[in-house]
Image (cartoon, rainbow, N blue to C red; front, side, top):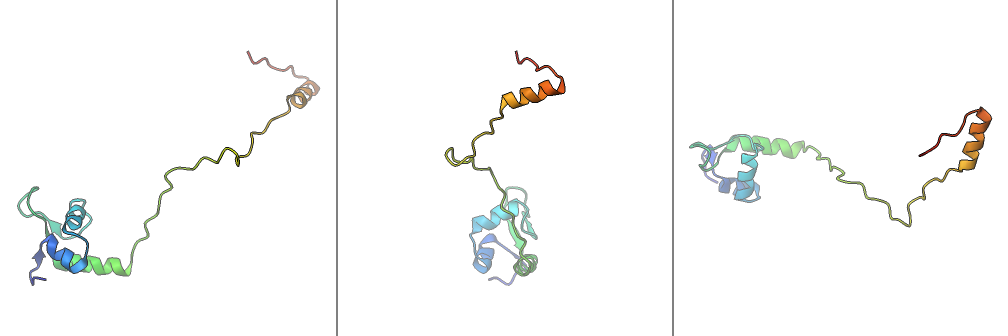
Length: 107
């Protein structure tokens, strides 16, 4: 590892693991503190090694749990699903007649 304050992605890969491309993608996404492009948007990424080391040790001590989102609910299998509830219409009509209401038509 060079004894410079600012290092390349290859030097980070040698010290912390992963690949050069991984560190470049993480820097482009803004996830690595101390990363910048000194000569504009299409230049190489440079990393402040002291800032990255401090961030890396902080992440090792306190890793944040990443919740796994539930993407979709599985539909129940057609043979194990509960059948729909069938209401007895004659009982409902009798209850309506007792209450003095006329059944509404469904046309």
